Length: 64
Image 1 (cartoon, rainbow, N blue to C red):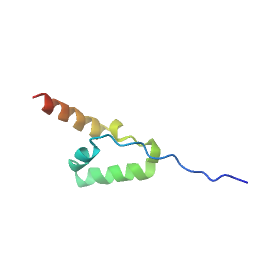
Image 2 (image 1 turned 180 degrees about the horizontal axis):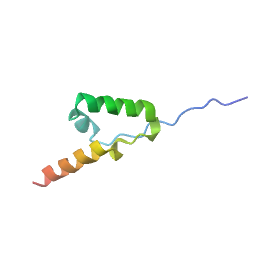
Image 3 (image 1 turned 135 degrees about the vertical axis):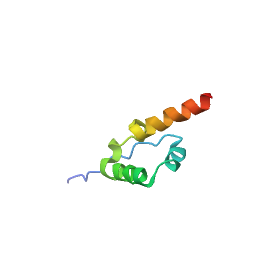
Image 4 (image 1 turned 90 degrees about the vertical axis):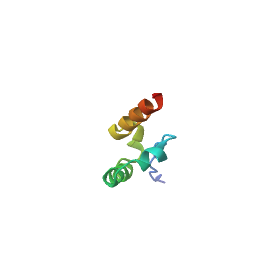
């Protein structure tokens, strides 16, 4: 009997994902949705340029 392939679960989102997502433009939200759909468990939002840039800006603003 053959086993059916079950893809792995998506990567966990960072704790501040909702705050980050609220700052995205419509085009960036669409890119995020496409990446989640097409890349699945290989997509880590915390490794994207837009998240790292946002995270650095947030950290800089908190230091002031």
